[in-house]
Length: 169
Image 1 (spheres, helix red, strand yellow):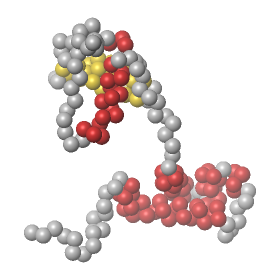
Image 2 (cartoon, rainbow, N blue to C red; image 1 turned 45 degrees about the vertical axis):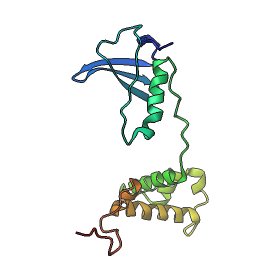
Image 3 (cartoon, one colour; image 1 turned 30 degrees about the vertical axis):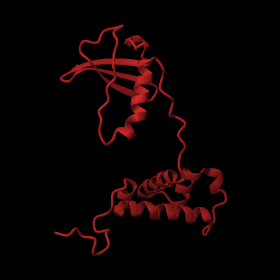
Image 4 (tube, rainbow, N blue to C red; image 1 turned 135 degrees about the vertical axis):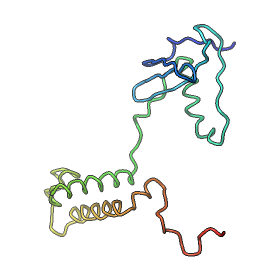
């Protein structure tokens, strides 16, 4: 049996928009948004077919297409709110927060209290590991400011190639 279209079966808050390329259905379920282009002659109860663009990025888009197909069948998308934070992401966040504090004129001790909590700062020593961690975070953030932030996006720095790696002409 072929699926039939039922707008009210699609979960979440719905927005229909008519644009130059036809009718677009936007749905929101918690923090997730789905966008689907609909045929102009599609009506409630009509049999429909889903088409996806074939291209080099298809494999990476399959999860999105499956979520859209499940939404058309009335299933809410899976909740992604339980993403785990990686150690590297937490380090990047703390480095940028430490830099914000330093640029606002906060002391290393005040930065440590904001990042690690009051209880951790009770153990503060002038040459302790907490102060060393704050200094490390500040150096890391200053390196980001000097151009290393491009590495977070996977973009190589200009001039970072080894000599002899220039393209031949």
